[in-house]
Length: 585
View 1 (tube, rainbow, N blue to C red):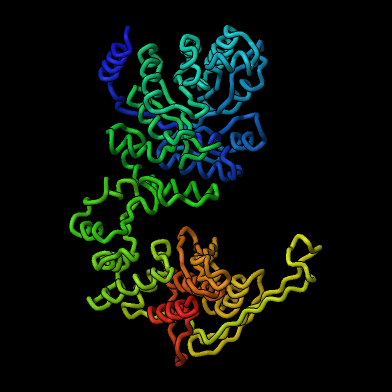
View 2: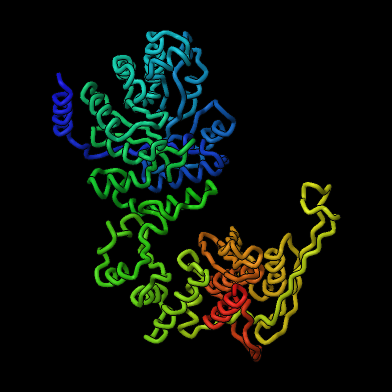
């Protein structure tokens, strides 16, 4: 048969194969996802993530590999007593018996039986190259290892999913052997045959073709387990479903070793909203964003703002033309209603902003701005961003700027002055590694007026920003207890004009949090301490504002002009702008 004729037959088979009406979502965040560098989950973390996955409504949660480490043993020992999963089914992961071993003496299989789960997922070689070179055994023994292991677990009353490791590589090189392994697992009683792209090197057309041929050849339901080494993890999963796969294994946010596993978040959204395939319960799809972010928090990773569907920028609009259209027709520039996945439209105000963008942002914040105020904000934003501010990443500073334009003045404190001093007393060496011990003292003093009272406070820290924060804590925390709940979680500095050397203007970005809320503030100045102060003060003011702190001043407020350091009004920002421009010039 010619190549053209073969392609024609393949296309005919594909077109006649029906898209499944429903697909099982199998989550392996707790095992495969935790192999990503930088993730180290405690047992408590794993239990909390399992609750999130159950709330989302995934069908299966792979809890780990019982017997492989004390942490997974503890998880399986505790999960039955501490969690009551409403929708999800817990799965224990393991491998086939050893080469020429007995199933009734195999410790891995025994641990699966004793895990307390009703479902086991075992991995076995499906690539002849691995059987011959990695296991160093015969192909017949490779098939027998799979069949014997599945049969043993089925006889113990467990449902068995078989993960066909390196399936796509093996099927490419020796399809007869790979199919023989799958057929042995099916005959032995496997509930699902999961085709694994273990090296992650397949492309969507490879996956769709191979999955379709397996679906045509065997009656046992087929699943796919895909990695993202080509950047096609999600596309490969959709291709597998198009070819007839009824289970997708992946992780929340695509966590996993190397470049990660296929990301279940966009897979669930695409199947449910774009292809009409049932995944998680329809009423739980709105939890997709919150679960994605919650899991990110539990693994101590910052959520990707550009992640499809659930990222903070997924439905963010910056260009004036876009926002102008959205103000008239919300669906003009959004491919779905963001609320379908628990997200929302976000209007990013920047130098590209027009009046409609500012008006929409003001409405989002509940602010009433007249035409003059809107025009002032638009002009100010363009000037400030030209000077180095970047408000699309500094949501909190932007809000304070817009509130000031509406007439709001932060009531918490007025700055009289601040001073920072650093003393290095470890000798003449310029580099820390030359010293036995580096003796650095940084001290900051702030002079504030709080509800009419002048306060002078001093704090020490491991650097200027830390010392300033310590001094502000001394000055304000007693009056505003909410102050102590504001955590500074990240600090970034960027030099904007490197050609100016040490006189260059710097941009400081500070990320802060209070409970589940996270916000970002910005400062810009030729003086890095001044830029840091701007971002720090905005962070604290924003935190107090959103904590509901409304101090009632019973004494006369300080009458002096606001320092450019306390950058909480548009006037002080403009002052900072002029100083930065002067320093730069």
